[in-house]
Amino acid sequence: MKAYERLLKYAVVMTPSNEESDATPSSGCQFALAELLADEMKELGLSDVKVDETCYVYGYLPATPGYEDRTRLGFIAHMDTVSDFTEHPIHPLIHAHYNGAELSLGDSGRSLDPAVFTHLSSLKGRTLITSDGTTILGADDKAGIAEILTMIEELEKKKLPHGKICIAFTPDEETGRGADHFDVKNFGADFAYTVDGGAEGEIEYENFNACSAVFTITGVNVHPGSAKDIMVNAGAVACEIQSRLPEQETPAHTEGYEGFYHLTKMEGTCEKASLSYIVRDHDAERFEKRKQTLQEITTAVNEKYGKDTVALRIKDQYRNMAEKIRPCFHLIENAQKACKDSGTTPVVLPIRGGTDGARLSFMGLPCPNLGTGGYAFHGPYEHITAEGMDKVVEILIQLARIYGQRKR
Image (cartoon, rainbow, N blue to C red):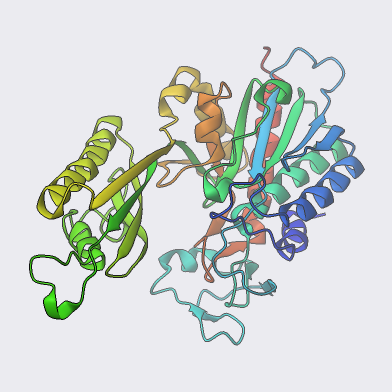
């Protein structure tokens, strides 16, 4: 089975995670895909396949006889999707021989426009896969799952020698909790790759340091006709807090290694208001300064309006995995070699986000990230090509070959 055919099968299984839930998994629907994958893994001949009580899926391809002393290599992808644009069933569309021009997404009124998505011209002639424009596609990260299992099928079909291959599929990556219950010890890999990135050939080992930040504002609500020197309008204070942050340090104005403050949610009345942010920076020192800025804003606003007006809660989410990957840089060098051996140009990029691998690297499993061949994730313009997925499968096969030659 081709990787894109697996993606089409997985995409229609709705698996949005729920940021409001503290349960694991955050949404019960993820078990449906987990069980489907476990059945398929058994059919492919993987051993010790299981879905645990927290919806993590594990399975293993035993080493080729005589290769038991080679590096145990892991491949990881996540089953959940974002919750945006998942209000109704997903209907993938296949556009064979894409001509590189503007492409209508079903009857949604949306289209993929090369003037906006400038890489589209490079996909001319390929088989493009999209949603109907009303939902996400879910290639983030069901494409990664499809590519990993297709790699397993190809290794077995072609009888290619390899060390032990360890496979895991996780829930709740999109909520930042995908590694919370990952069993690193029993997973047993020496090193691993998440397959959860962009275009084929992309290799990522530098990610953001990340935290969430929530301002809770308590106002003083009295009749506006007699409010002078008494009223504190919580909604207005929320607007003031936002105005105190650097205007140019937002996702819309930053790229590369530049960090940002991103307002994700704002709600309130005169009585109560709240602001929810995610804060990101590749540099650890600058990241700490960003958190300090939020604390200073809290102090200043409380001095202006009263000491209990604003409360700030900061929660660290993940750290830059680069410090854990650099001591085992063969992971990046071999990924580059695997790309070249499969006829793909490797591109090493910083992640403007995070992956399960960032946290797993700090849990003792060095785990950089590889591209899946997809674009424009987290929205209705998400797309991927069958040919790009085939390239990723070949890259994964080459990695299995390379580490099958490397003794532990």
